[in-house]
Image (cartoon, rainbow, N blue to C red):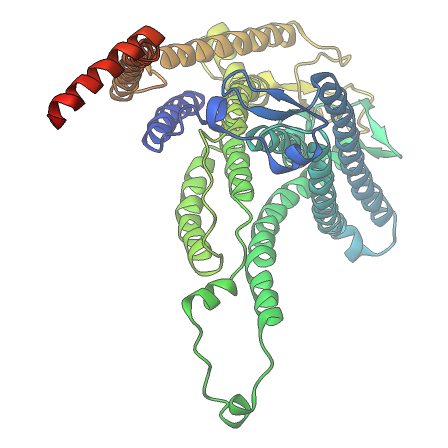
Length: 508
């Protein structure tokens, strides 16, 4: 999956270069893109553009840097607030489970985990929606305050702020389930507790709650935008634009007034861009690459989801939105950088998932040391201390510990093997990714030849233009010399006498 992500990005860069050349946008950001209207209106000074030579508004870089640093501090504060809310919801779910467990009602005790999970998921959904609205509004204000020159730079800064928030917001629960769940339970005779409850029980409640939350939130967050952005907004927009019924319509209720195409188009919603669509695809790309070792069927579900969503988006953009205004763009901007970051993170994440979460390495280690898999389950189980149980039965639990609860030598051998596997896996996959990057050029050969041909033709046209300009300058100088010669007094007198001589001959 990691190699697929690298290959996918490489071939996407090729497709992007083909499209940008076809639509003449290859050098749009460097040369042709103009300053934003807001930047033009608020910039305190103007300077000459060294590329185009035109006077353009200018904002000092030192002030922009200070504003960017201030905005980053606000972003860090908002991320801290998000993490505080997530921890608060986890504590709420845990404390609610403890309160229900300590009650005398058998039904509530039996359903304590479900009640805590359901209420915690609803509360977390509400917090996510409210914080998303607040954070998006705050990100727009901060990005506008940072005074970016072009629309591309403005959108890249805004996208980065929102993605960082959504990354923390959506991936915090799967990260806990994949890497931290069950790591701090303890062992018989030395269990870790929270408010008198063993962390194992707390972990079960939390794990069930987070699993329910992942499924519940993904479904609701998938339905909510379509309802809020399409159906409800369309209904409310048409309700506001609906004219008052005339007398003819009252007399003939079955007769509906026919609208012209431009009037029907005006009643549709205004297309606000593709930011939400990009964000949804990038978050899905992260889920199917970062956690693919934990759920190998995730890419298949994503494929089915995208196949259905292509049809739904087509219906939405054709039937519910106005025709959008065309805007030029060289590429997808900072989204490609974010996808690269996710692909690198996926390599590290899957390496740790395989090494520390699955039984892949312990099985290989046991087979290598013993020669077979006989007795592997006993190898993974440890015996609890004799004074831990009141019966003569031996209590077994999963872990490589001795009778005193200390890690055995096999535990440290496996730890060294796991860390070595992470390092080797990461380097091998990233090396193969670099090889794929080197073997697959970012620009296809046909497009590169066309670009070189265009540059050659442009140089030829420039040289021809310069030659034509020099010839025109020579002709102009010769004409000026002729005019100055004719206007000389002696030459002028001689020409006058000749003209008079010819005039006399004609008269004669």
